[in-house]
Image (cartoon, rainbow, N blue to C red; front, side, top):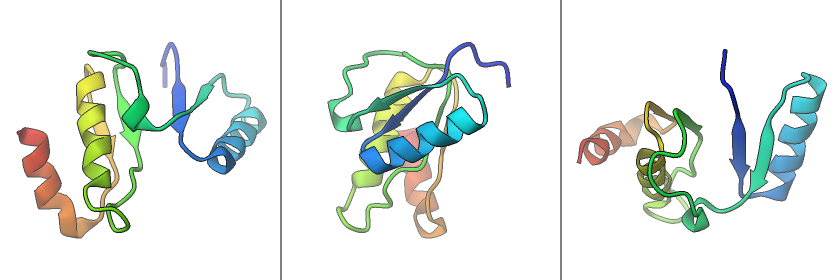
Amino acid sequence: MGADHIELLYVYSESLEMATANAEDLELDIDFVQCDIRNLGWRGSSVDTVIMNPPFGTRRKGADMEFLSTALKIASGAVYSLHTRDVSSHIKRAALR
């Protein structure tokens, strides 16, 4: 869709391997990084857009909010985040804060 550069961040090596294979099959030019967003060293607006599927916070309360907080700090444009319907109002309030 016209992006100059795409980076995908994955915490799990299995997910990273699967995404890499899919990108190769589709002949996409993507950089893959294995990291935990809590240790991401990016500061300020580092990317235009963030699209993410964070953990839903069911195993560890607030895990999804850590992802959302980081995304809002590094994106200069839009943040698209997948969340369950039951937390949508909570997510919206947190994002507006």
